[in-house]
Picture 1 (spheres, rainbow, N blue to C red):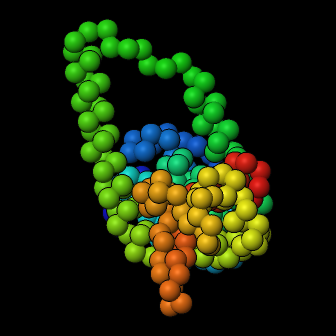
Picture 2: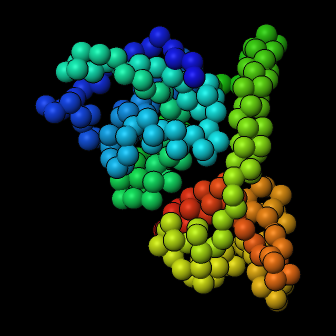
Length: 242
């Protein structure tokens, strides 16, 4: 991974740990607004080491230089630089969501509130000249080009991971498969017209959120991709179910 020459100076506690407070959103030349991965890690307090924890988050399809950029953090007590990463707000929100903990919910709501406040800021004015319009079009084309690797990587890499049953997804949010399936029927994930077993609606499949697979017994079973698992958890959390 490429490491930028940017250095974050973090405050530490007396024992060298990062202060257990919500991470500060800071300006970043690559991501516009960003969060230190170590600050987020310190707040979420996972049981594994930082390096292992961060590598596990990357399994969800985040892309370097699109969702995160490498940097270094200076630990004043240890008097040495450590590997860190600037995370985009979207990546920080998704990581918080998939932690499935009270800390994760608190961090996710914090990022949502920050986005809501940012959205209330005055919008950029419409182009006032032909030159400004050309610049706006160029900026939009560049953004599409920058987003393309993330979209391609997400669809290509995430879908290669093993698919999940409703039981496995439900366990991560404290719901039985029966209860989860009832909720998914009500929000339109399953096709009510399908009388024998459960079947995803076509929109859910088209978005790469799930697949219908034939079991050894010869019947179709709906299985969720990791992308679909994240969608279900986020949707239910927004509805106050998860």
